[in-house]
Image 1: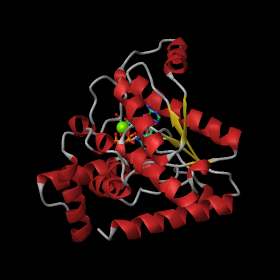
Image 2: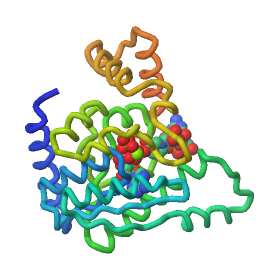
Image 3: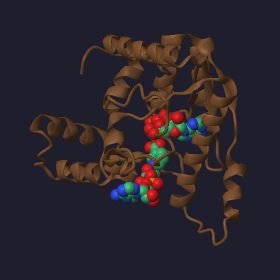
Image 4: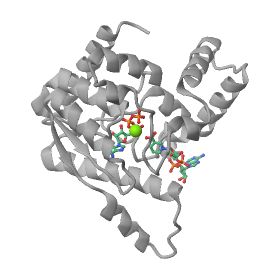
Amino acid sequence: MPDCSDIADQISDLLRATLKKSHASGYVVGLSGGVDSAVVAALCTRAVGSSQVLGIYMPSDVTPPVDGADVATLARVLSIQVETIPIGKIVDQYRMIPGFVESNYLIGNLMARTRMAVLYYVANRDSFLVCGTSNRTEFLLGYCTKHGDNAADVQPIVHLLKTDVWDLARFLGVPDSIISRAPSAGLWHGQTDEDELGICYAEIDAAIKSLDKSGWSPVSETEKKVAARCASSLHKQNPAPSLLNQV
Ligand SMILES: Nc1ncnc2c1ncn2[C@@H]1O[C@H](COP(=O)(O)OP(=O)(O)OC[C@H]2O[C@@H]([n+]3cccc(C(=O)O)c3)[C@H](O)[C@@H]2O)[C@@H](O)[C@H]1O
Ligand SMILES: Nc1ncnc2c1ncn2[C@@H]1O[C@H](COP(=O)(O)OP(=O)(O)OP(=O)(O)O)[C@@H](O)[C@H]1O
Ligand SMILES: [Mg+2]
């Protein structure tokens, strides 16, 4: 991977150019206490200044208090404003759907889409853009809620693997408590990315690098698993199939 300083400069250029072209007033970022959103908030601050960055912390009924503490530490370090918008009661309203089925999976995806709706509400309210936090590993694996946490106006770190995001976090001075925590979507108690995916990020990223080199011809079992997951979630990356181009 190129030098972190070059990467941060390139991303800052993208963020400045996107904001200028849009005539928007700043960036809104969903802050979870996790490393992806922390890195994105740090990059936005570096690019456009802390007064043009607004963090939104959206705890649910299953959010551990440590997340809020890490968000507060990050806000202090970056000197950015953070609004807390709890989503528990909003998500609860979905239970009024006739025949509602209670499951971590269904509620989890509703939470991710609720956070997306809140971020766009704030963007509309303040004439801001929603800054995305997807990294290349989760983008390729489709490890995200479609039209939920992957929905944004700009995706500054989507070309970086998760292991590269950790390097960039260290370079940017993201607090250690955030860098050292296990990645989690936080959609249910005890959820971690690596448990749900069944492979650790170091192995996934090594497989992606090897696939990049071989032109995506998988050899090892891990490469086969990763490639299969990527193939089955391509619909999350591509525009919805339509006949538009045939008109
Ligand atoms: N072939 C196809 N062509 C077009 N569309 C297709 C499709 N197959 C499914 N779909 C659509 O996609 C839907 C399934 O996708 P989706 O709704 O995303 O749901 P799905 O991929 O099943 O679940 C989301 C996964 O991402 C994880 N997640 C979510 C949010 C945040 C994070 C995080 O790391 O922070 C992780 C979550 O824990 C879960 O494992 C289907 O219900 C259908 O509407
Ligand atoms: N409690 C929350 N409050 C605000 N935004 C959230 C919350 N939970 C998730 N999000 C948003 O959803 C995004 C996707 O979550 P994801 O877990 O992939 O990233 P992360 O929490 O920043 O880092 P990590 O993957 O290491 O946990 C977050 O980056 C953030 O923008
Ligand atoms: Mg997280």
